[in-house]
Image (cartoon, rainbow, N blue to C red; front, side):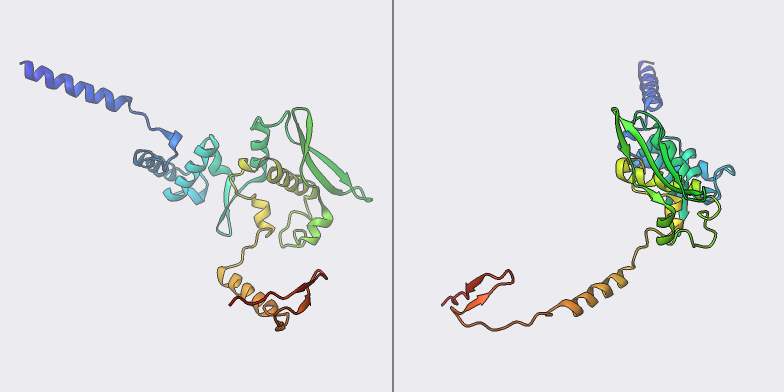
Length: 249
């Protein structure tokens, strides 16, 4: 009888310990095997939803990435899913989400402001995003329509620069502000508009190797080497006259 009671107490303690066990997400979803298992269960559940964007439906792997991003930003995974888009195989934030992250970050005294100008015809021309921190004005880089044309953003097929220039100026100004003043909020991910405009073209490794080889062929040994006798006075590139060193025996 006493043995039976002891087993019952032991089982009750094990159940209580299991019930009280909490996954420690401070280590990240990849921090422990328990964290990863729990995150995968969440990812599978989210992937079965028809409300999440299509790129996450029936795709637990994409959902897992969204959960990891949400955990790092301390926000809802659903919010990440609604604002994280793949462009040419790369993740990108919606610009409006980036602006919201800046405004609610608590890093600045007030929400993001925009200093705008118009051209001689009264059309939007330039924009600078700014705010204040401890009473000091914090600015991003100016974006203008001439830049949009020079960089090739304006002329792309389906470009919104032609139809909604003020909105695009604000989006780009906010992106530049974030890159300069609070890059940690983006986790190194560019905005949807930046990738669509082709700002961050990456060369394949084989192209980089060709570029390096071409540079070597063009510049290596471009200056002829002249033999100099020991002790002979020679002129350095800076114009200073020196004696050639004696060879060691």
